[in-house]
Image (cartoon, rainbow, N blue to C red; front, side, top):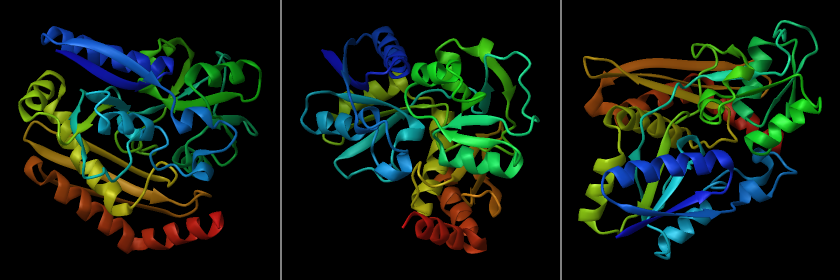
Amino acid sequence: MTIRLATRASRLAMWQTEHVADLLNRAGFATEIVPMQTTGDVVQDRSLAKIGAKGVFTEELEVSLRRGETHLAVHSAKDVQSSIPADLELLAFLEREQVNDVVLSFDEKFSLDKPGIVLGTSSTRRKAQLRRFYPHANTAEARGNLQTRLRKLEEGQFDALVLAYAGVHRMSYDHLVRYELPTAQFVPATGQGSIAIECAAALDADLKAQLKAALDHPATHTCLLAERAFLHTMEGGCSIPSFALATLNEAGEVRLHGGLISLDGEEYVEEIQTASAAEARELGVRVAEAVLGRGGRQILASIREQRG
């Protein structure tokens, strides 16, 4: 049978979906890619926080799953909302790419230490982290796909862009990377660097098992269970400056570094805990509850008040 893959139509999303199709082809499946425009792709004149970030890059793909028009939806894992509707499920997570944020510039001599530089990003989290760790820098909204952002950079709208390494690498722009930001400070968003595969819960169970076997990377899946449990407990999406990074060691233990930062970068709450892989979800909940209890609730309340 032919597995129909729903995807956003951007070059990066198509690369990700072609990679998924290749894995399925190797497992003996025929595939068809079905590109779509999402709300987040169409609405470019407002920040994600202002258009309401929940599902803006996934909703149209999910509708196609519900209607049976496609079998799988391919998402950047960091774009998937914290709560999945009961009639859908996250079937698999592909092996994670390098997770950190990077700084891109056409200027080979670009310096992050130069006062007054303008850094382009559409991420609420990155803006807050930059205000904390590089307070001399200015941030500017940088919506659009990777190619659009690079065009804006070339036009001089920014001195540099701050992006996830995974997309930069997949689109072969490594030569523009001037800095790799350390994950100890710039802890990434939940799911950053991984590709998530979503399906309808009602999809045939045997078919789901075969598809999962072809696509899922168990270690990545375990880490994403912890991170997504953290995000769900925080009741956050990509409009909230939360962060979470789980890593799995050889002993089968998951270490989760999660936290929350205020929009101005002044208030910062982080928590690091470790648990067995079998307790990944519970670990995510515990870390989130610790963050909320140590000032996170007040930060979230302040963010909501500022946004009206």
